[in-house]
Image (cartoon, rainbow, N blue to C red; front, top):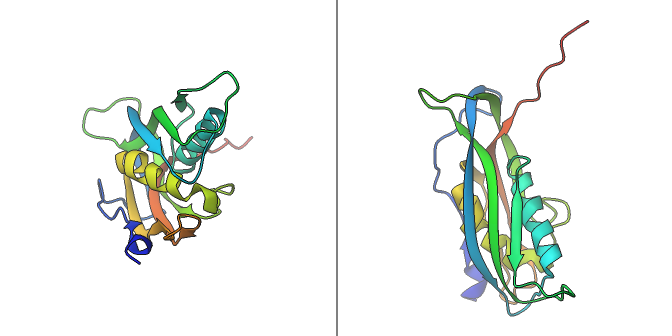
Length: 176
C-alpha cells in the first residue's frame, strides 16, 4: 500500500508563469544533467533510453540542441537495468534585465503520464519518475494539477501531471 501511495508531485514552482495566452520575452538557458537509472523491472537498450529521454525533453520545451548519452553500452546494445545518463539541453526562461538574444515565448500546457507524450506507456513508469526527479525539476515550469506515480508493482503509471512550460512562439509570416 505504501508503495502505491508514492507519487512525484513537483508543485514547487521555479517562477510563476503568466497566463497561457500572454507572450513573454525569454532566453535559452543551457544545462547539463547527469544521473543514474536503476530498475528491477524494466531494461532499456542505450538507443531506446536515449530516444525516450530526448522525446520527454522535447515534450517539455527543450530546444533543438538536446544531446543525450547513455552508458555503459555494449556493441550489441542489449537492454540493461542500470544505466548512466548525461543530458545536455536548453530550455526557455523568462528574460531578465540585460539579457540579450531574447525570443518571444508563451506559457503552454503539456501533460506527462501514460500516452503523454504519445509513446509513453506503463512500462515507462520508473523512467517517468526519474525524468521528473532529475530533469523536469531543472526546467522552469508550473504544476497546474495532478501527480504521477507508479503502481505498487511498478507496472502501471498512476495519474497524469498537467504543466505550464515556456515554448517559443512561431514567427508570424508577413502578409504579401
